[in-house]
Image 1 (cartoon, rainbow, N blue to C red):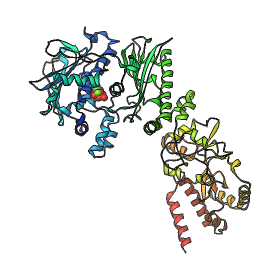
Image 2 (image 1 turned 60 degrees about the vertical axis):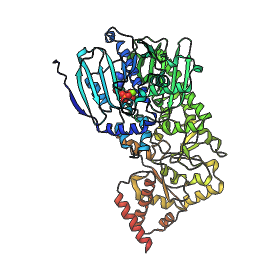
Image 3 (image 1 turned 180 degrees about the horizontal axis):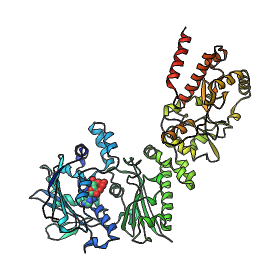
Amino acid sequence: MTTETHKETLGFQAEIQQLLKLMIHSLYSNKEIFLRELISNASDAADKLRFEALTDNALYEGDSDLKISVSFDKENRTVTVTDNGIGMNRNEVMENVGTIAKSGTRQFFESLTGDQAKDARMIGQFGVGFYSAFIVADKVTLTTRRAGLGAEHGVRWESGGEGTYTLETVDKPARGTEVVLHLRSDEDEFLDGHRLRHIIHKYSDHIPLPIVMKAQDKDENETVNRASALWARPKKEISNEEYTEFYKHVSHDFEEPLAHVHSRVEGNQSYTTLFYVPKRAPFDLWDRDGRHGIKLYVRRVFIMDDAEQLMPNYLRFVRGVADSDDLPLNVSREILQRNKQIDTIRAASVKKVLGLLEELAKNDKEKYATFWKEFGRVLKEGPAEDYAHRERIAKLLRFASTHDDTDAQDVALEDYIARMKEGQGKIYYITADSFAAAKHSPHLEIFRKKGIEVLLLSDRVDEWLMGHFTEFEGKPLQSIAKGDLGLEALEDQEEKQELEKAADELKDLTVKMKEALGDKVKTVRVSHRLTRSPSCLVVEEHDMAVSMQKLLKAAGHAVPNVAPSLEINPQHPLVMRLNDESDAQRFTDWTHILFDQALLNEGGQLDDPSAFVQRLNELLVTLSK
Ligand code: ADP
Ligand code: MG
């Protein structure tokens, strides 16, 4: 390797410009948080070094006394944050502070509206702390060297935040990262020891490493923060503000959390957990490679980020820490996967989080509604994933229903049961592609007539949920698009006889219709479900709902073709006319129209849409003659 400095100028990823603008706009009123973000990064860098040093002690280079230092220089108008953490090599610098490597970046930028005020509110969710330096600085110089590399492998990154940055190879004897902020002309307030100390107290007291500054009027360093693990302190000594600031650090979120639960278990095994539920879903919630899980510590020593083993998938929105007194310091991800102590902590963690959600649902309906809006679709994965807690999770589920006919998912199964009719033995629901399709489904007609509530499900995950969730408190859950509805007890004699009579009278009609439709249907029969629509499709109890078939097909699965049954409404004028139709061709056309309409209502796709349109047009012409 030569000693040339290898300086180059590189362009930021296009989005970063946009991001910087938004960031400055949205955070200017709270600009002091730049320091919190730089300290948070320095602390993460120390954690990473500790983790890597578990298997390679040489990375400490003889100095395992990890700390962060903050200083300022009045003359040169700079503020500097230095750490002796893991540092970065040239590639890492390019990846981490030249691009946004986060999953979900593209979706984030696509979701921006162009309205600065609105978009600015979203920036915190995206969490790109480093760039907050540009709120107060018009030039940032980051010099870093990765632990374990020689002094000549230092890298200097410098940028004015205006579209490009330079990269240069430099000598850096001290491992770690130094970030120098060249303050904008009106930001002199930060060239003040009192002010900086105050900011550190306010936002970074919980950082477990010492944050040192030069003592006032003396030439020695002093530790400014409390420098102890927040979760290890007694609950009653921790203020809400402290919990909040700690949350922002562990979650990389800029907003307050929705709720937290902090607990200590002493006994056979001892551990502390501190979990948070965020207020807003992060952008990578649906990304399998996104940042999930929580931080694992052993006796206050950071072990790893994103310890997925500690939380099941359906609680992947939870952030926070678990600190075990008993695990060995050298645990690896592999060991975690089959470790009894981890299993114990995980089981207790699930109970803690479910307990927290139950408490919110009971005591703070508004917060619970926020939670549900952001994470309800994730929690719906629970009954399938966690059989043991199925009932507990089920009580936390919320649905839209015909009770108020709005798309707000706010009906608990317990509310539903409390409103059930005399003689109603089942919990009824319908699944559809959209709320509107569910709400207007012909299957609902009989239920509306009888005043029986039906849950309206239209999230993608709902089919999956209902496939794994067949009863609640002894009451079967019944899709109203399937087989036998079990409404007998709610039917009156008169209705029953009328229906039987109609079925009898229309026997020939249903036989002829079945002939016309062939394999498309299993049977054609007279319906007791319909009041306004002429027809609907019904599948047998154990067959797959039409919407589920569609979902699986879309996901590329081979789906067995199960023909539904066509049910017709004996009172509908179209059906009555069809019964009198003598022209064979017209009879076939109209029958197909009734079938196709019913399929469309289910969100199904027509095999031959143009045939449908042609038949419909012919029918319209006939009627208008
Ligand atoms: P986040 O902290 O949420 O990942 P940031 O924008 O704050 O986002 O930082 C981006 C990345 O830059 C970090 O993930 C880290 O890899 C790297 N980085 C920033 N500061 C440091 C530092 N002091 N030491 C090592 N790496 C750092
Ligand atoms: Mg950060």
